[in-house]
Length: 256
Ligand SMILES: NC(=O)c1ccc[n+]([C@@H]2O[C@H](COP(=O)([O-])OP(=O)(O)OC[C@H]3O[C@@H](n4cnc5c(N)ncnc54)[C@H](O)[C@@H]3O)[C@@H](O)[C@H]2O)c1
Image (cartoon, rainbow, N blue to C red; front, side, top):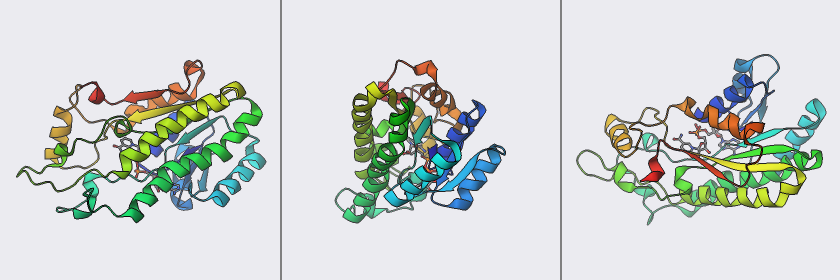
């Protein structure tokens, strides 16, 4: 089961699991988008409308999953709100810490943290009852280190965007929640780990891509397919003695 399945990385997580032999439940806010991802994987995959912040929506999914499949082996908590430089125009005043709206802060926490809590509680309980399962929470390098706001300076030196306070705070919480779940459910056969990606190239301006690449030991931003191997590793028995950890896959970004 993959949340945020219709997004940039969610689609690749679904692909990776399907290629490794899983039957994928691709879940996202829009039923149409989720179904389109599932159909693209092949005939036996399922697209489902899901709001990870809504316990009724998650409970409906749990019932459906039990009826149709009788259980779940892998849960990828990938859905998130992420303020990205490419979605903001010049002069993004509200991204400044001093101006950041509390309503938006709460919304990001709701999706990125409460969503992982609800999915892990309600879907993870199926795994606890079955005595096996792998929960993979998608965190971020920004859950480990603070954003380097200098990255978002324009060529003229103007700060056109600040990576928000909400996103790194939420991802730090996800890393800690993962350790909680791993220790709480370890004796029930559940493993819980984070996968922390670095920045993915996705239509950002050339100046930003160069700055990000120069700041990365491997010299480039990630491609959206760069996390497929790590995801399958965490999902499968290849990582069977690993739990409570944060696998950082960032081209070396956090090594400097
Ligand atoms: N793209 C990057 O550079 C990058 C870097 C590090 C970490 N990440 C993390 O990877 C994950 C995926 O990122 P992405 O770039 O694919 O994001 P994205 O914005 O492309 O996709 C996120 C998906 O989550 C869905 N979603 C949002 N709220 C939801 C809700 N309440 N219920 C269900 N689905 C919901 C959206 O509809 C969307 O399809 C996120 O956890 C993100 O924080 C991304």
